Structure formats: C-alpha cells, structure tokens
Length: 595
Image (tube, rainbow, N blue to C red; front, side, top):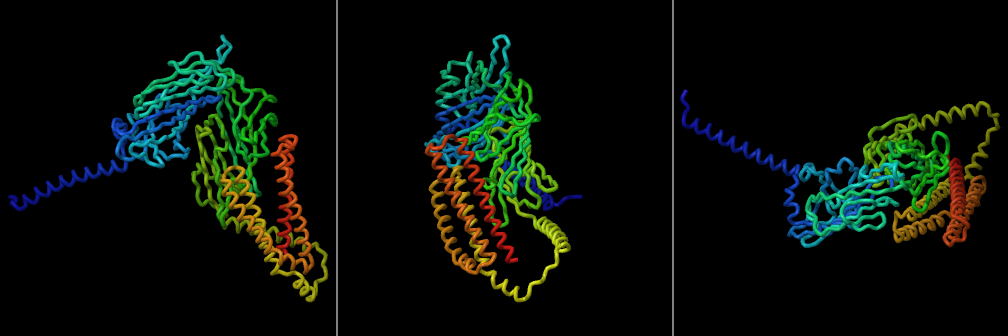
C-alpha cells in the first residue's frame, strides 16, 4: 500500500515530537529529583567561600570510659552571599564507636541538623542549619558535640601491678573546610599518668594540648596516648528497666532495675550519677536487702553509691540492683480544662555511663485517652488498672535527651463505667444500711421548712466557689515558687506573677467575707464547719510562716546541720499538706449539704 506524502509528513512529525517530548520529560524529571533529593556539592566548592578561622577541640574522657568531643569552630565567610548551613563530617575510623551528635550555637542554643543521604567522599556527614546566617565578610562560632565509647581501653599489668590505659583519636576536627588555627586538648581521667603520646604537646596534669597553624580538609592526624590509672575502672549499664508511675494523688514513683557491668580491670567499690533535683525518698536495694551507703547531694543532684556493705564488682562481673525514688507530679504535670499534659525527659539520669539498652514503661491510670505525644511509644500495653506506654532506646548517654510531651484526657467511656460501678457499690452499701437501720420517726413538714431556712444554700454556693478559688491561687503561688527554685523562671517574671497572684488572693478574701459573715450569723452545722475552717486557716498560715522563718535561719547559718534542717523542714511541709487536706475535707463536707 502506497503512503501519501501528507500521511508520511504527519508520521515523521509525530515521531520527532515524541522523541523531543520524551527527552524534555526525562530532563525535567532529573531536575525534579535533584530538587527533592539535593546532593552535597563537590568538596572543593564547599570550601570555596568558607573556611575555619579558629578550631578549638576538647576531647574529654570521663572516669568510666566515655569520651565527649566538643569542636568549637569559628567559620569565616569570605564570599558575597550569606551562608545558612555548614557541614560536619565524621572520620569512618571511629564510626563504630560513635554514640551521638548534637550542635549548638555560640550562645548554647540547640541547632537543627540532618544526616546527608550521600556524605562527602562516603564519610558520615551532617548538615547543620544556623539560626542566623553567616553574612559576607563576617564570622560565626558553632559548637559540635559528639560522643564515643570504646576508644579508651584498659588492662591490668600483672608485672607492674598497674592498670595500663590506652586512647587514640583524631588530633584535629575531620572537616571539609581548611583550618588556619587549631588547638586541641586531650583530657584523660583524674590521676592518669602519661608514659607515651604522639607528637610534642604541652602537658598539664591529665591534659595534653596540641597546636597547629594550618590543617588541611579531611586531615587524618591522630594522637595515641598511653599511661596508667589505678583510680577508676570503666563501667557500663548493660540494661536499665525504668518504670514511671504517674499517681493521681500528687507524686511520681520511679522504679529502676540496673544491670551494671565492670568492663575495666580494677575492683569497683563505688560509682555515681545524677538524679533529678526533685527526687525524694531515694532507696537502693538488691537481692540481699537495702544498700545503705547511697548519698544524695541536693545541691547538684549527685547520687554516690558506696558498696562498703556489699562485695564490690569484679572485672567483667555484673551487679544487679534496684533504685527507687519519688518526684512531685506538679514538676512535670499541667492541666488546661479537660486536657492533661506531661513534659519530662525519659532519660531521667544525668550520668557519664553508657547504657546499652534502656526500656522505659510509663504507667497512666486506666481511663485515659491519648491526644498527642512527641515520642511514639514502641508499644501500648493495657493492664488491669493502667495503660502503659513502652519506649526502647539503645546506646544512651547523659547528653542523650528523649523529651516527651504527652497530652491526654479522661476517656468518657471509662468515666461512665467507673461512675456506674461506683454508684452500684454505693447503692448496695446504702441498701444494707437501710435494712439494719432502726426505723426512726420521720421529720414533720415544719422541721423540713426550718431546715431549709437554716441552711442558706445560695450563700453556701458562693462561699464554696470563692474558697475553692482561694485554694487554686495558693496552689499557683506554690508552683511559681517551685519554678523559681528550679530556675525555670526569671526572678523578674516571678515577682510580676507573684504580685498578680497576691492581688487576686486579697480580692478573693474580700469577696469571701460577706458570705462568711452571713453563714456564721445563720448558725447551725454549716456555721460550725466555717469555724473549723477558720481554725485550719490559722494553722496553715502559722505553718507557712514557720517554714519561711526556718529557711531564713538556715541561710544565716543559725541551724546546727543541713541534715537537721532537711529533716525538720520536711516535717513542716508534710504538716502543711496535712492541714490543706483537712481544709479540702471540710469544703467537701459543706458540699454534701447542697446535694
């Protein structure tokens, strides 16, 4: 069949258009992929307009064998465009020992970052985003913090009777940028005595300081250190199981099961870590009983464990024990209308010891419905009386933070079910009471009318409302003082908020007076309750004044010891809480007359 010229022209044009369109599509698709998955530019282009004017490295090894590297790098932009992010690379030689990374500004603000999908020359690379750009011809300092475990090793030399220690690491930051002035400090544990080391650093105590004027990008200069240390043995937690119970009556109970391994070559008799500053009633016990030699320093939260009344931990051995303590719920809890909120770091311990496996169980009482959570739990477990959120983390260190912001509310179904069950129990109890109760003479209509007249319901409702508002203001003042003591609020803001709350308290007390006077004049059982309230109020004011006076005497050094101060102050605070509970019961007793 012969094809006409017109048909031949149309077919040829269609083929050309198809090929052109396909090429254009592939080109656009490639550009789109590049935009959605940006690649790091060539290393030579990275350093074209940016260099490091000063690099200050501090590589500190703690007594338990974990080393923290802080690189304080001052970047200089000698280009014509502002720079919004910088790169930080890790040497693959040490990648298997690597635990974690974080970046902070010169003013210690945490910077956001992400790991690059394709690192520079195959090295692990982080892209760190700056809060403020580095403008042309200006500089900015950024702090990069990395942690490692396993680079510091030790063994006991039976010939010399000494524990030999070894450590090696990059002498200077492994950076894609040129460095024009570098200072590097290697700090080893207390009572380390050097025998050999790389190069000719200056030596001061347990610190070696290296200096170099120019460091080329991706420099692989290393420092090898050898010495002796008979003071400390390396340790690690092979496992910690932490159970956090949120109790509705005002406290948080924490129970932790620790498996502590001595990975060094020295017999271990004591160790320490930090607990939350608000921790109270701290106890430690094992299969034998209570370990009585634990001491808690309230100034910095340091908890020191001495195993004098137990056998120490031999090299390669594991010590299992349980740690239990309480914390005030209001330090982590807040509520707005029907929504409750918990904010806490699941890594409650601030320690210099590596934790290989951390299992955390957060117990909420049944009847809660989760609205949102900043950390997704690995599983959700329902027990008889609790809903449990389970979290698992590996290779946890003191610099590791797991900030949980959990919002939840009461489940309406659970509340109804609980209410029905409670009503059924009350119904059965009152029915039994009615069956055995001696029948009494009914009150006359006149008695009922007298009762209605002698119980001023309207005034009672107003009195109760203002009194509960007064209690709420008191709680707000207590929380405000707690925030100030924990340095969660500036003193200036504290003074402003305190003034507002004190004004509100004074106004509420004035509003309360006319209703109180009316109830007292009316007489009867309600007036007796108000009189008892007045007595409890006087006791509460006296208690608060005593605590303030006691604190002043302690600050002026007029008390015999800190232990005596802590013991008596705790008794005073407990007594104040007891008085407040009595006030709450009296208010609830008044409410029963309105039912």
